[in-house]
Length: 172
Length: 252
Image (cartoon, rainbow over all chains, first blue to last red; front, top):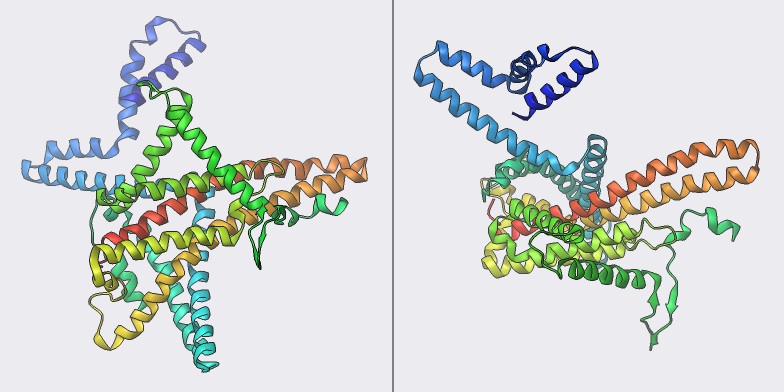
């Protein structure tokens, strides 16, 4: 609704800039509404065409599909929103992944070092836990990425997190 | 003196303002501690004075305070559900503290509290200990199912559990390192480019002309740093919410 109105406004401004008279302005809003509907909501127009051709059953199915798609899109947009603008989103994502991975390796190495000091098993504790820490770092990264893709499930308030389970399988 | 003005690391030095020594312990008030107190005082003053009038139609300050409140509340509700709102005071305090500290650090000659690893690590440990305590309080030993994912073959469980525990222990590290590294790197970059302006213009003539380039860069970086300051406070709060979600719903 907003789009045709604003488009009409700009068209009217353009018309007045071009020095045209009032004769054009009744045409403009109609023209803009037509134009606004096609880029604004392409699925809407497509579905209208489909409803004319198909039987009511597939119409309701399509309606349901469209609703589901809209839901998924909404959660996706909500999940993508925190990052602000695009250039900054890349930077935030990069530091996030890097720190997750490095933290896993560091903690693994730290635990191994303490084991060695404690039990005098140098250097085997460090070797084993460094490898485990590496795996944990990879798991962290996979999980962060899974959470990004799965933020919709969390936003919907689901207790279970399937993407996390994927991360576990990948980590194990 | 000449050295100090260009040295990018100098701004992170901690020095004692009011020396206080008890036995072998050093309780001196440092510049870091002073700025932490300023951050807390500033945030408390702003929020209390902004919401003091409780106008139905909020003024400028009140709407900012309400915006911050709504923002944190929505973030927490999205990540941890309505049950997670019991942790709202913690998350709100952390977010306000980190955000105020980051933004206060943007003033020239001010000390950036969050650019020290020990400060951010203390905050992250606070979060993780809350997660562990709340998780055990809510679920008893069921909380430790967090480390034993379901559907894993029995012979892989020791390996997977070890990896899960390391992964869990790495959370405070990654949480603190991210915030600290962002603030440290940002302030060093800013100082390096500002230092270029200083040294180039000291050459005179062509140097003053050339110093326009790093100056433009410093201006652009300042804008970026304001964004990073906000973004990192937000990321810290979001991850806190996600970890708290684990404490409330450990089964996965």
